Image (cartoon, rainbow over all chains, first blue to last red; front, top):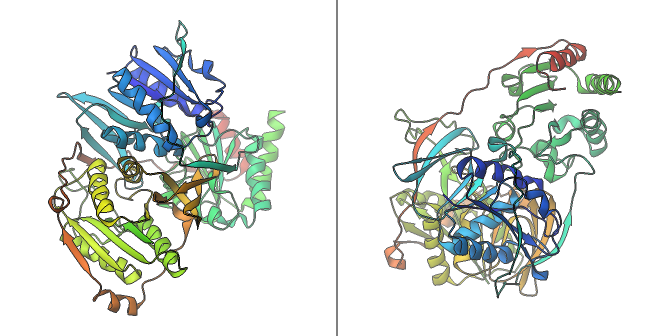
Length: 320
Length: 249
């Protein structure tokens, strides 16, 4: 199988969210994958050269300065065809969901979203992926080539560094890039904290945190004491307590950190869908019947306003 | 301006879902079905565009068995003007659905197509983008705000990095995210009125489309269960266990 990996970029810089897709390729096609990077004056391309890719192709063009699927998709389709790729792969993110399904449409290719396992059987690819809000796992047979895939980050982890560095090759953008879609702005940012989907520790807060200041003080404070990222429930986001991009769950992000601390999170099915693969889960909640306790490794029935500052202090002191 | 909205029949989002005895599908006995919640949001947005004077007609389309009429009636009761069922009983994959929708789009020639960003059964999040590619139209996925002006749409999108704003000329395909709006409850008068609204049934062959699913669901299983752990009495015990037992801090 020949794999084309589509690196995640914001148009100017390579994102480390690309790494699980590379880990996937190392397992499934160790000597037969190429990484495609798209943007304008792209920085950080060399960070992808340590993982055994045959080449890291880099397409720079002013029309590709922002990550618009309509503009990027023909570039991906062009190089997938030119390389004769059997699989076009990226880590599951909003970037790849937007882009790769459009690529599949351009190539009339079948697509598998968010896969957690892939085998070959009787000449067909057989993949597993979460369905019904990750309440169930579905097994899918797919025929045809190429197949477009997004791979669920936590299921594939990080790639292994390899010996000889991959060559970086400048590649031309296809002659016509559609420029109907225009990028206007991006509001957000993690405020210097680690990326939610990459962080080793995630601290999440729910609706009881009252307002943005309280949320930041208690949840942000605890996250900072652990060097972690901040997450939130849908209810907290809907109530305007936390920004949208912090939402963990079915319609938000999927995370699987080493440590997930859920503070005043009841544990709805939709929230659990986004975090139940975390290695260690801690739940802090006043309600002893909260469903989150059914999946937590360590549960503390307590008032967050009392124990979160205690915990934050204890962690700060023991760190220093 | 005409707005086309696709509506998928899926299990009710609050229904308990489990594998069937053979492990080949979910257990569908007595399962309550509903309009895919993201499609409901797309439909609500289309109806609001009509109420605001931007749209003149809202057309709902569903693909599937005769039972999908139920969801189309719901769409009509919410405020769609007419409905189209593309009747097909075999399972479809996302490219097949996109091909059928592309043919409906070509027949209807709407200025805007709205649809949910994903269906809550297979959670694939593919059809809108595939459709946009097949029709060679701009796309704006995961929309949390849509403003129509000067022949285009300015769309706020929910991305992993924050709210991104893009502008697309119409016609375009826009997929709805959770925070685009809160769909209305269907009023009794709407249900009564829906009975007299047109619901047309056609087949893929009528549209000149042949489909064959290349992605097939063969097995359904429950994920490995996670066991409840232990209760701790205070933060000191918690920190000790995280350090000495779990070794994560």
